[in-house]
Length: 330
Image 1: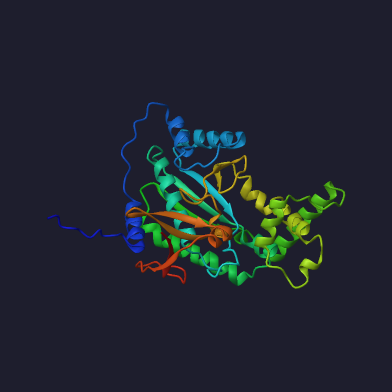
Image 2 (image 1 turned 180 degrees about the vertical axis):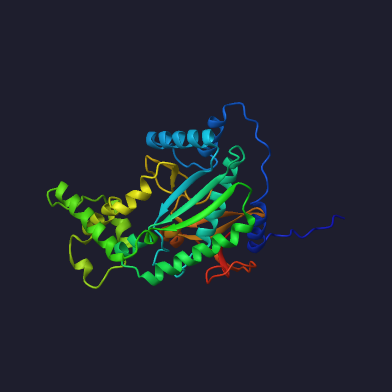
């Protein structure tokens, strides 16, 4: 007579703890049959992390930065410019949640993979466009401060688990200004320049752009009574990237760009192995996968279609209102 055995199912908490403990583990020494430059470039562009074919500007930037870093034996910085706020529609707002933490895991894995061949190491840089989001989406400074602080808190939480050769940093666009009025002046100058170039015509928008605008903007009373409110928001959105201070960040030559969505100058990586969504406009969840889990980042649309259960979690040192439980999908 056979004896039945109970299968021990890993809990979400056990998975997250295991994930943390695996972060610093060394990779096997790579077999490199090409030049060091080629090896580093290949790992940066690896399909283990890259979601889409890279545009020619991205290829040129990446090769140039790699060549210089290999020659000078200096760390390579990979930067992600992002919204700098948790989408206000979520109950999780204004603080970070599992989506930000899972993105950290994903990018640490990527940087570790490259650092295995680039011994000077890798820097992953989060650049928060918080001051822009405040004006663009009608958010408050307190909300953006809360997001930035809780993001820095989870970076501090994962730092003891960082692999050798991997560094994280978090910068705020707001930190480039002594006075917010200076940003407003730069923004107006950039908006005026766009209007001058278009003979006063507001930007044309695709349906996708309109949907994104409607999702992100917390309307002020009466704002949507203006039939051109979306186009006026888009004008401001385009102007952000033409402000003098932002261009100082964007024009820095010695960094490689990554983004969850396609730009021809960026490596498209998404936010986790299985999610292309922007982590700041989504929430994190785990999906059962045999006796393990898949890390997901879910947009509002995806979340609305998802059936899940909450599972309690208590990870020592991981603080914040959004880390006491997690959505688990069967």
